[in-house]
Image (tube, rainbow, N blue to C red):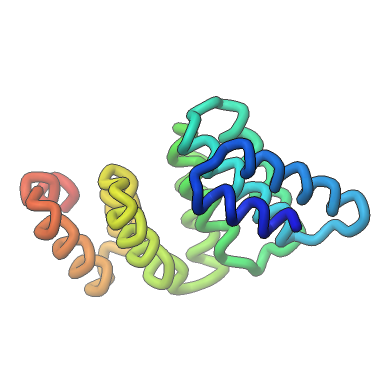
Length: 168
């Protein structure tokens, strides 16, 4: 029920429905604590923060993704979300530490996740997020031809070759 309610709220960009989904997910946690529930709650708070940038929403998103990552440290998606959340929260050193540690634990993590996440951000109209993701990926994996190509295509698509030069 909680996930379905959140998904309906997310699709409609309805904050009240998203909050109802969070409440249902939290009630479910009292009976069964599963890392995925924390991830869903984190995702819901992150979306709430994007709709209404209250600091407590971002704080709750981080707290829930950190809990999910502590329960299931092999789930790469949680680590990717933490990198994005730390970036949005201005925790740049923490972001780099998580990113570097995750790349060490899961070789190829950056190449598997960042181009796709950046492409998705671009299509949601989040150009700054996409640019940050490409820049982070290039910082961690400067030798990656795949990331270099994806980043250059991105800057061509948004017709910002000036940004391309500063990223390199």
